[in-house]
Length: 220
Image (tube, rainbow, N blue to C red):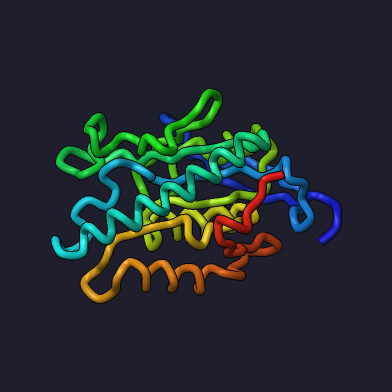
């Protein structure tokens, strides 16, 4: 892909009033400079995986989450040193939800707490772009390539990765930087492996997803 701009239509929803369609322009990004990247950390909140496994398995889930958060925190520091925009997405749960707004479980994990100038985007759905200002925040910074990690793999991470590509952003998903709990039929490790395999090479137009381990990701 070489030079030029491609135009995509994005639907934005203001806090009140009618849905409005706006046109956003992103430069072609196959050889995009590093300055066009941003680091997006999704739903790394205190209670994100609470109760997401059997009592026997929960300690293993908690330990794996701690390891994942440590890798994300290391990438966050790399991004800071490179001057790359950092965006933290925080899910607002309703009353009684483990991520209910204002509760200890809702708070972002201390390890990845936003620093000065880092953006926090609050959402209420699995799609980090849906009824939020995430796209506008990225456009303000001329971002064309997202490095993504966080929770949960099959819900907010998968949905946001696919939506980002459909909006024209290239995506690097951190292979060992997203986490989830067990389900009735699959352990968390199988879910993560499935989504890494499924999303690798996923594309929409000229925008694509690449899967890379944290150790292989650089911001400068």
